[in-house]
Length: 293
Image 1 (cartoon, rainbow, N blue to C red):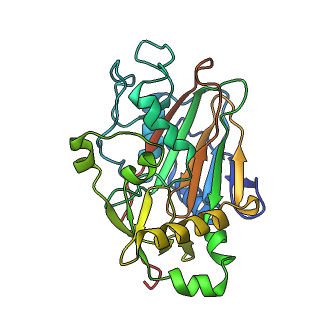
Image 2: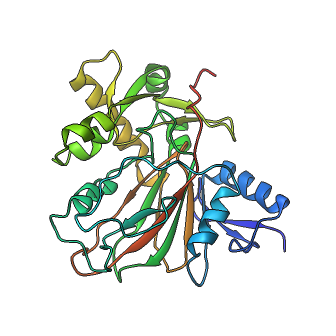
């Protein structure tokens, strides 16, 4: 069966059919998925059961090298997932219990409810993220994704001209710090800001895209209040309903998004009552391609 795509939103996001992602991918299937990602920016692979760790890593690695491990905020009880290729997007302790309200990992993770792009705070930001649902709560906890290419296309021409060549500083200090999260001196050094273009060219499609994230907290050469106001205006524009798809999870879903042309955020749920177990693999990216390139 040939791979096909069913659009889930008028401007981006589709469900992918006709491929078993638990098995090694044929070259033609890999090319079809890459073309689908370039077109839609987000692909859903719906399955009856979650991929195993090995299957998720193998699927993701079919498209390039994975991101190397980096500095994480850990639970007071330690690390739950043993394989460093998996990011633990859960509210669970290593023993399987629900994290305490004041657990630093939980508090840090609340920042996932801010609009962001994975790893934009790294010199080389991420390419794709693949998030697999193992346990989901009975209500809430959707993931919302915004199409930053469509947001650029619909930006007023005067703003396009104003922002096209701007450069931003990105850091987890800007995003998590906005919530009042306290960092150690070592974490402040580890999370030093990096510079990214505010508008980048998406390599696969050639389209221009806003490169937005709650991690971007400064514009190089601008006074901070003026920069923050512009970034807030752009975020409000880019996250209008017309540009946003809300994914309602089922156990077994694998959702893959392209961080180079989307933002996303988690939505709230009763995390003191219900477990949520999500596991992410992340493709290493390349230096952001500025709009002028």
